[in-house]
Length: 99
Image 1 (tube, one colour):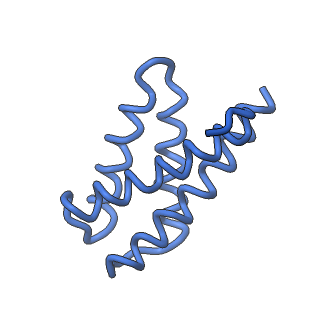
Image 2: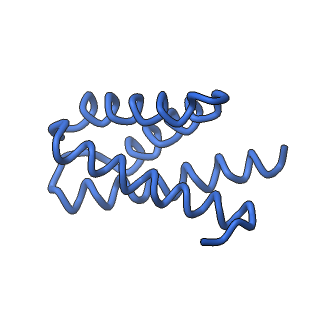
């Protein structure tokens, strides 16, 4: 239970930071608390067994397009890919599964 809570909180924090950094890189209007909220909602959707990762990515794409001025391609898609890559690395590190 503590591992899931730690993965959720660290994954949300780092995904929110990665989304915020990508937002600044692409010069998209938005705030850090907004990106953190998007990451938290997507992480909650990601806790659904078996299909959580797919639902989480769709939720994140929709929320990014809705609450920022990002286009679906390339901005929102690249932001989601970077955020999920960083979150996957963090989860592997916490779970002691190293590359």
